[in-house]
Image (tube, rainbow, N blue to C red; front, top):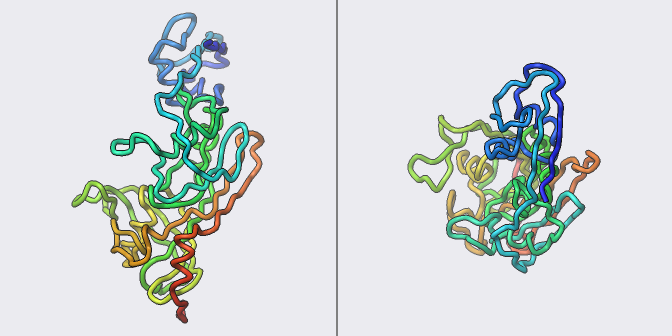
Length: 305
């Protein structure tokens, strides 16, 4: 059954979509704009447009249909749930699991797993499905947060956009980094020579990666990485750009014997809960494949600045 909400403009000049965005905490701006274009939002009883300017005292009604069932298939795929409440779930994604269905990966994804694991999903964008707030590459393991309803998705996405999330990664990079702590600042965009890859390019988007050395090994450096921005493949591209690709990353570096995938793990995640705005942090240990590889290589004594 659809739900109708009523509002009255309190002043002149507000754009309709922005007016509703401030009052409908559980609906994203894109969802509101879609409802407007579908005629589900009326101004003084008549369908209207997103950019119309309101006059004080005008009545606005928003009709929100019940979410439809997703066409995606719930699948029993083992994924560790670190935390869960009515609004969200924090999961520890294993390597090899694609986050969202896409060409070449129609199912067997994290979304399919969550549809089976979280029967209390309330719907995102009008469909009963989990809200993916941020992504991890297929072969990157570690922590992710997903929203169960649109209000939580809006709350979490706003934090991410404002760079209020705390995200730490553990990475093993090739060679010995000369500095024990530094920032890599370089714009990232599509690689003009290979559209399936990203690269440091002048026309790219600004990206900043901070790292701190944890320890040195035979031919590697173990680092803790903090992202200031969240560009596609950012860590992998930035370390390749400074001549220290992530170990095991065949796309941006070279194959590493004994390492089945890139040595990159999302080890820590912090954000504010949509329910009460309290700050929470979660951590994840290195999975067995990465920990085993690390135990098999010898530490090295290196003096850094």
